[in-house]
Length: 185
Image (cartoon, rainbow, N blue to C red; front, top):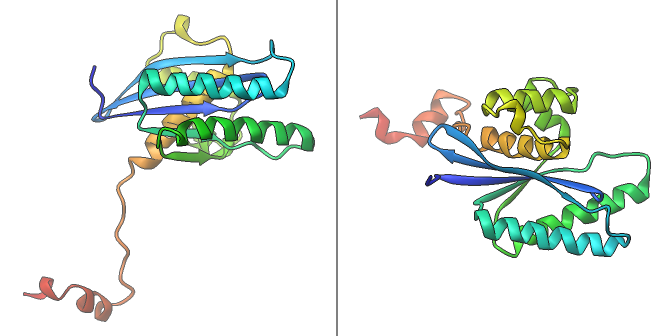
């Protein structure tokens, strides 16, 4: 199928990184691919980063996305974990930047809010709502919720980027007339 646009969503991780690829045709959405990149077999953090770059580059070359939506790391108490997660996110972003793909970052709360209507929804609730919204058969749901988190980022981006843009409103009639002299004729 030919799509109007393809959005790749990434849920960064240093043990498991999720990805979800969403095809958009008009107002119709289709899950193109959904999965995880397992990184725990690599002992070195640097080898994990290389693997992230290689796999994200491979996904980009295979599916040719127009945009990348990535989940922003949440602020935890462990600074070392945050640093590693930030590196993983940066490497995934670098793979997209190397192919001139625009990147948008979303907070986990924003993604959950967009998908479920609640910013405090669980990963399981997000996965179930994605299954329903995108008509994913239960048997095709991934084992790891990192994949559905990534798909959630892609769907959140679709919602955010598909909103109609509202023109700036004039503060007074005088300002409106000054900006729109042709509408008075």
